Image 1 (cartoon, rainbow, N blue to C red):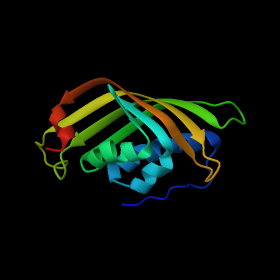
Image 2 (cartoon, one colour):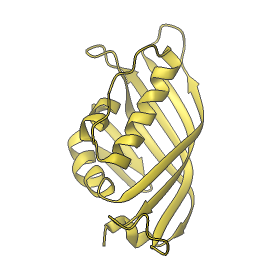
Image 3 (tube, one colour):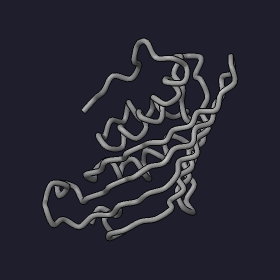
Image 4 (cartoon, rainbow, N blue to C red):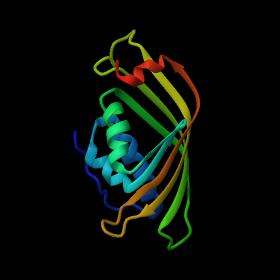
Length: 154
């Protein structure tokens, strides 16, 4: 499934938030182009004790796995820190991420893995396409419930 990358009429603050939404929606829908629009080529994504550096690594080691699962990432309580005229910003947000094995998300008794926590994201404005993109995305899980083995896809 492919989604529109650039949306018209967004304020600077909304454009920054949209980068976060593009990133999470990409994982939920398997839209690689949307993920590439949400992160810089040299982006770092940290989750737990794992740090993935560069879009190639993020795509191969995380996106390739998560995008095959039945997932929904909910993002809320976004706080945007940007100075007028700057091309860098910082976002903090709370998240809930629900994961089911591929094709099992709508099964009533399917095994699942739910995680809640905080995103800490440093973003930059890409002068080539005008989009805000994540440069460093930290995932700080606060709690989880369910079966973590769901994350392996098995």
